[in-house]
Image 1 (tube, rainbow, N blue to C red):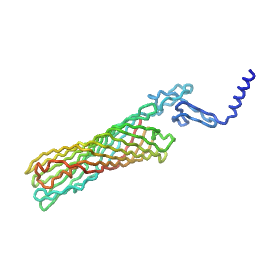
Image 2: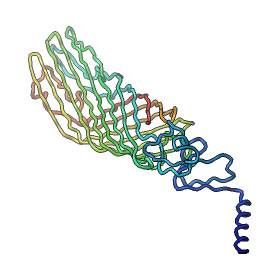
Image 3: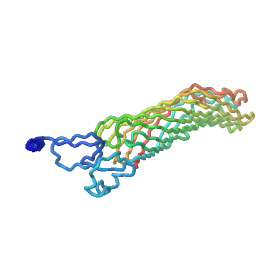
Length: 362
C-alpha cells in the first residue's frame, strides 16, 4: 500500500511540475472565435480561456444562426467532439457579363449591280450576358461537390453600310454564345472562402460535361434590288472536360482566383444559307468534326462574410476547328443553290470579356 501511495503522489507532483497542458480529440474542436479546428489538436501552455468541445449532428446544424451552447442545452452539454464540419453545403452565384469575340479575316464578294461587300466591315460589339451557378457539397468533410453552370452572351455584332456607286446595302452581324456545364469538384484541402488561417494557397480539381454553342449570322440586305442573303452557322460542342481552381489569399478575406478548363469535344456543325430576290434558295449543310475549347477565368474575390462573396474578373474562351459564317460567304451574288451548299471548318475564335457578381452559401 505504501508503494501505491508513493506512485500516486509522484504522479500528482509530476503533473503540477509540467508547464504545458494538452488537449486532444478525434476530429474537431471550437477555437475562441467559434471556428472549427481539425484534430489532432495540441494546445500548449496554460489554458487561459475555456476551450469548448461540442457534439454536432453535421447535416442540420448551422452555427451562423444559433449559438453553440444554446443549441445543445447549455454549457453542460458541450462536452463531445463534433463528427462533421458544420458549414453551409449549398452555394449559388449570379454574375453579369460584358463580352466580345475575335472574327476571322472575312470574305469579299460582288453583289447585285456591282455592289462590293466585305464581311469584315460588320464588326463584333460588346453586349451583355448572364452567368448563373448552383451547387452542393457532400460528405462528412465536404470534399466533394456537384455544380451546374450556365452562361450566355447574345447579339454580338453590328451593322455596316455597303456602298458602290449608286448601289447600297446593309450588312449585319449577330452572334450568340451559350455555355452549359455539370461539374464534379474535389477539394482535398480546406475550402478557401472560410479563411481558416491554415494556408493561403488552395487547389481544387474538377471534371464534368460541357456543352458550348457558338452561332454566328450574317445578313446582307440590298433594298434597291430586293435582294437578301442570310448565312447562319451553328457550332454545338459537347464532351467531357477537366480543370481546376487555384485560390490565393492575397489579403484578409481577399482571394486571387484562377479557374482553367479544357474540353475536347464533338462538334455538330451546320450552315444554313437563304437567298431571296431574282434567285431564291434555302440550303442546309451539316458536318460532324472534333473541336477543342480552353477557358480561363481570372478574378479577385472579396469574402464579405462566410456566407457572401463578391467578385470581379475576366474570362477568356478559345475555341478551335469550328465553322464560321464568313467562311461560308459566297464570292458572287446572287448565288446559285449549288454555290451556297457545303460547309468549311478549321477556323478559330476567342470569346473574352469581364464579369462581376456575387456568391451566396447557405
